[in-house]
Each structure stands twice: as structure tokens, then as C-alpha cells.
Length: 197
Image (cartoon, rainbow, N blue to C red; front, side):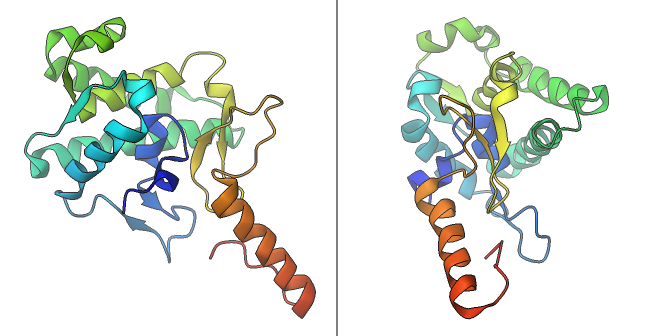
């Protein structure tokens, strides 16, 4: 279930935001964290697929029913802020403040050593919430936040690491190909393109 495609957003914070699938279509949207136990499976996959960002530390999850509401609140704060920025509506303080408060809480509740992002490589394990908070804070740095994009097909957030900053899809092999296939089908049949399928 937690395939490499699920991590195509790049930074852990954006991958967590994307755990609401098809967020842009409320009739099709669903939450991959609906079952609290899924969070531990996600953390195990994130250890592998986000190892470069996290320094290869083990990502721990406490009691899933306790962790879930806090992680969901952080996820929604991340999505609201970076989606607003990527869509060009700016960064109102009303969106920045909740993210900073959630990140501060996640770091405060963790081991004191985790509050310093420079020490991330020195710890063998950290709570998933803390790793997500550090990832979100790194995305706020100039040079990163300007490269957060919204996928032109599925609506996921992703970090555009292309040289010229013109990437349109979260994953060319999935969303890019689906959009191309949909356009091709539309041209052949004379039907309108299906954008979100």
C-alpha cells in the first residue's frame, strides 16, 4: 500500500499532507490515516522512502489512537499553508500560526534533543510527529517553499526539484501518464478530458 508513488511529493511533510487522497474532489476523497494502525505502517515506509531527509533514523509511533488526532491536525495545517502558497494566495499569518504551533508541540513533546534539527543524524529514533514537524519547518525556508506545487492531475502537493521549476505532475509515471492517456482518449472519442480519475 505504501508504494514509492505515495512518497512522490518529496519531503515527509508533503507526503503526510497527501495522505488525504483526491483532496480536491470531496466526492472521491479518502483519508489513508482513517484507521489509526495505518500510521505505524506509514512510518515504517517513510523510514525507507524519506531516509535521505530524515538521516535514516527509525520513526516511532506511540499509541496510534492518541497520535492520530495530533498528526491529523499537523497534516491539515501543512496542507492549508502550502496549498495556499502553491496556488498563489500567499501566506497569511492565520495559516502560518497553526503550523508553527503544531510543530512546536510535536518537538516539545519529544525528547529534548530532537528540538534541534541539526541533531537529527545523532539520534537513533524519533517520533513520526517530530520528523514531520522538522520537515515542515525546513519547507518554510526560502528556496523550498517557492517550489511547492499542486499536481495538475491528482491535486497532491509536491516539491518541484526540476532545474527550471516547471514540473507539473507529482509523479510523471503515474499522474503524467494518466493525463496524457486521458487527453489521447478525448481526442480519439471526441469526449471531454477526464481530469481526476
